[in-house]
Amino acid sequence: MRYKIILPLTVLLFACRQATSELNNAAEDNGSIPAHSLDGTVMNIFVNTKLNTTSTLYRNDISRTDSATDIDLDARPASMLTLVTWKQRPNPRWYGANMPDSLLSVETLRIHLDTFYEYYAGRPLKLAVNPDSTERKIWIARQEPMILP
Image (tube, rainbow, N blue to C red):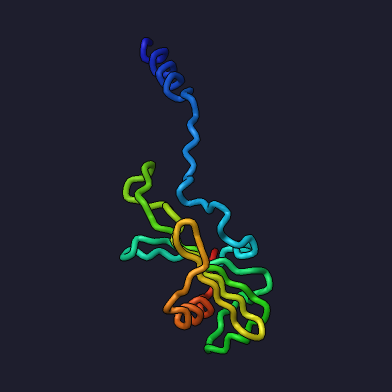
């Protein structure tokens, strides 16, 4: 009989604590990403366990859903792809899981009659020069959308 009273009171006591706001502020942008870069939908998500990074590839609504099978980047006129990369850190609420930490880079690839590639890096993000820009353009353009059931 005593447990029927003590157990619900104990649950109520520990369940009714003050909620704390634990937002992941380290992963947010401080306004240094161009606003047009993140317009659109998520196309794919990548995790690099060797570099301990996670990346999200966004596409605008104009870009096609199919990927270019050849290197003809002009096959997708007026499309824009943006790859955002974060450093990872351990998730304190889930053992063995990682979550985004600080923002590392933003790569924007605009494809119209020609290709335009921008690379932002640093803290805060600033326009920089990527020595692998040719390979990165091809790699980003060849990514296929993730398939969701």
